[in-house]
Length: 273
Length: 318
Image 1: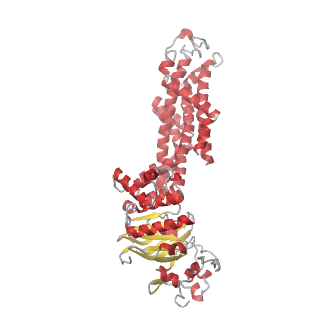
Image 2: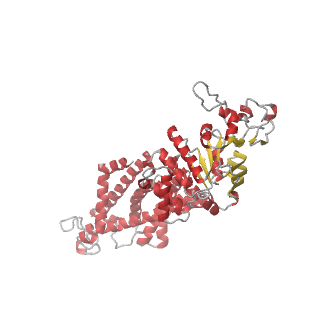
Image 3: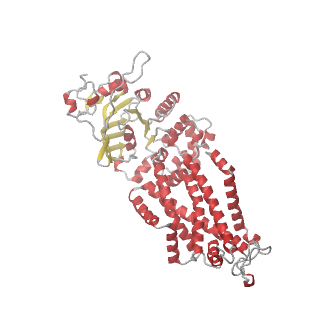
């Protein structure tokens, strides 16, 4: 099994993806040091200038440096992506394992609620939540996490049902280990490879959700340099100054694609076992 | 060794599974007693309900269980979930058939052993010392090193030793071993059986051994109960059953033990009946070479003959 992971790391495709992800993480961590301008500083005299030596990726409609906004935007995007996925995964794993382990009425209640959540498309759910709570960084994080909770509940419940019947779970039970310990020490560690693959995929999805909200104007409120918001405002100048949307669009594309490819490859390894 | 202190007493135990509209009577009214120091074998074919019986003895059976299971003077059927949790492991425990699935693949051997102690209130350091001692007791070489091993780094026999160590960790009154050697090589089987026997002797454990193999039962047990289709058809001392089997099914099982090259095995034809719709009368009558008319209509009552309990209309005459 570990051999497969070695091969995964050695594959060119995965290395390129990792490189892209790591460079965005690097940008996010050291935004203050590497960004050439203040991402919020406006200069209307330089509005919508195409890429030049001075501004490598050009300037936007308010004359802000796009490169600096992309760099600071990666901080925002990755924060949303990691926090939302972590929040969604933890909640989903918790309810999933409880639902699968105990079964009966607990399972029925959790599953019916999950079905209600699943019936609404995740993005719609996120929009609904933002509409109720108003837009801010935290509402975006929470709404994105809510939209990914149901898939985690479903997946972890299914995995728990498989593992629950295995003899080492019975063995732990018959030696007097309590339910909480069995769920968190015996069941979850044994299903973690699948969970990790799902988390990786969701890191990509949550970026899409967050920028989608931004694009619609209900994401992280301006003037924060959020990629989706940049796309949304740049849309108005699409023929006049296409560089306004190319950079944020490409950033979203590359980052989401990288997370998805790695998630898919992890999933393939797990499925082949 | 044959003290008369009763460790476990099972009275009219029934385990029914409902599957849709059908009810499967996997265990249907079983009585037996395990005395202190007893090594009691429950022998039966696949599908006779013996594993269900084993699980129901520690109340881990998913079906509907009724009757009485009295262990150490406590009726397990009357305990709450929390009380039974404390009871498990400390008073009664079970050894599973497949050692590779009875150990958590992502936990170190040492951690799994120590968990048995820590959940029952031992401190970490004490748990470590006791776990180490246990591994030595069950004959695992380089115990310190093995504490840090994961299950896949051990052989099947070693894993089964660890499973046994976990089962006897808290010195329970009764250990149930559900086909403990079926998944192992024949040479390892003998070692594990010997280990079980020695542990039972030196710790005064009472053991219930569930097996399909009369040979295994004969190896280490002193009493034996023969199970067929959810019923106990014959219970008695090992020697007397082996020298004089009274139930036709016991005879059939004995005929399946290989005895040298000259004698051919006499396999029993047919298979265990569908437990959702068992035959009327004696459940064994369709396969029984001695069946009479009465066997097909009236269910035989357990008959006490000397030290033996037999459920057969023709017990004593055949």
